[in-house]
Image (cartoon, rainbow, N blue to C red):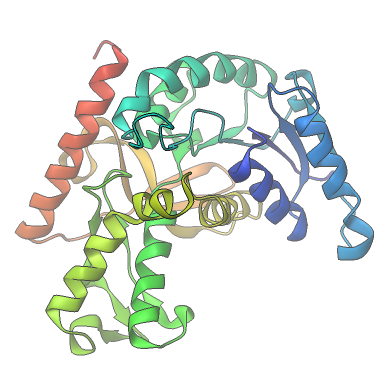
Length: 315
């Protein structure tokens, strides 16, 4: 029997994710959105590309949740994105979105959990770390089956900027970004290399710090350029996680997971390296951080706590 993935939200991220999923022939896809006709149209459009691209998968668009039953993985992208206010010209912060998107993500999570009680849920909706808490709270799922797509995207941006700076293939850049999905994320140059060569042997400290800062502001840079949130890279990062789970690949990917003592944190979603396989998040990998890295992670964790506190959940 083929695997089944539900993508909630037929906006730019959701539709791009659906495209990556079928192009890789990973699973049948159910696309859900509240807008009448939108998910149905996108599903039909993608289905009509099958003879050209050569994939044989079922695509369904729906405004309800019955079609999502028995999904193996659910990707939650629905919510209010970061867009420029037409009156003030300002962009909302991730924190300002928390209450609005809590009211979006909470009810849909209840429906999804009802129809697919054994699924793994991957959260993309911002503020990412806080929405992971919403999904875990409402679904009642164990921490292994509620994962945030954070480090996968942040690490991809970090590697991209390094490859651009050095004029090398992205395939040879190795590194990782920890912490919350926001401006206080924690790129780790001490654990970054190009084909095994430590990054500080290849690039000046000034340029490296500029890349780190650009990585932290990566989402905001794209919003400033496009007037809306990014979608291709977030979708691709999400699908890399979906693929690792569906194929039981045991890939090590930085994800937002609910820590229970790891790195000294409890009951908090923070981006850390973990093993993704058929059971979802199968193991957290503990890195040996130095004092500077621990201090940066603490700043990031405090930023996550401040947003999570807005949710109003009891400890």
